[in-house]
Amino acid sequence: AQSVTQPDIHITVSEGASLELRCNYSYGATPYLFWYVQSPGQGLQLLLKYFSGDTLVQGIKGFEAEFKRSQSSFNLRKPSVHWSDAAEYFCAVGPNFGNEKLTFGTGTRLTIIP
Amino acid sequence: DVKVTQSSRYLVKRTGEKVFLECVQDMDHENMFWYRQDPGLGLRLIYFSYDVKMKEKGDIPEGYSVSREKKERFSLILESASTNQTSMYLCASRLFGGPYYGYTFGSGTRLTVV
Figure 1 (cartoon, rainbow over the protein chains, first blue to last red):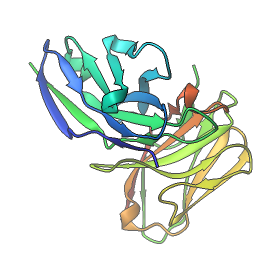
Figure 2 (tube, helix red, strand yellow; figure 1 turned 60 degrees about the vertical axis):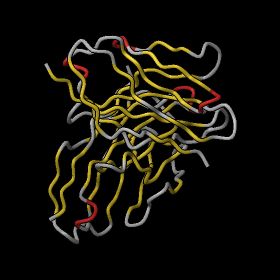
Figure 3 (cartoon, rainbow over the protein chains, first blue to last red; figure 1 turned 90 degrees about the vertical axis):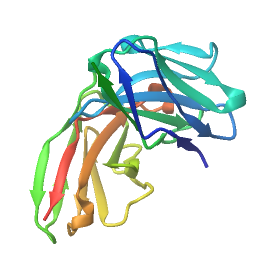
Figure 4 (tube, each protein chain N blue to C red; figure 1 turned 45 degrees about the horizontal axis):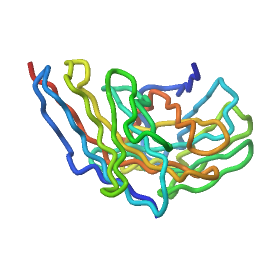
């Protein structure tokens, strides 16, 4: 069965500092991987996705993520955070075939301090 | 852009009431999903539907049912609401063909059962 672990429940970062949010997955083959962001009181918005090819993927709002097969990780990064990045971030994994559903991690809440 | 609309942002219902949560998408997506979101637990799948009149149980279907009579509408039904169903409910939709397309989420319905 597929699963996702986001080990950090809450992270606090200063505005302008770099950010890395961790995501580890469990899946038997090459998965599809996603990062979503949820602003307060809103639904989830897709930040970026990985399917194959280049292991470094670029997303919206200046985010990027790197797929590392050997570590079963898909960490999200941003070189310089803005106050508007304060939100909850979810990593998700899905099989690369069929019509199957995604499995989400428990989320990481990001707080930005001035 | 695909739009997924959940009819209510906030709902307050009494224990034992039958509750309907409505979700409508406007882009002819085949797949639709209902999740509940709770702090520390992330998103948990309640039910999903691959197409009209089709439904599949997710990870936590107990106490819920669904209806999909038309392609654009997917309803979540709480047969007899209980206080442990107080939660944020998120609807999502996706094109048929697997996880490549990711999900499009609605803004959520925050349900309080008193």
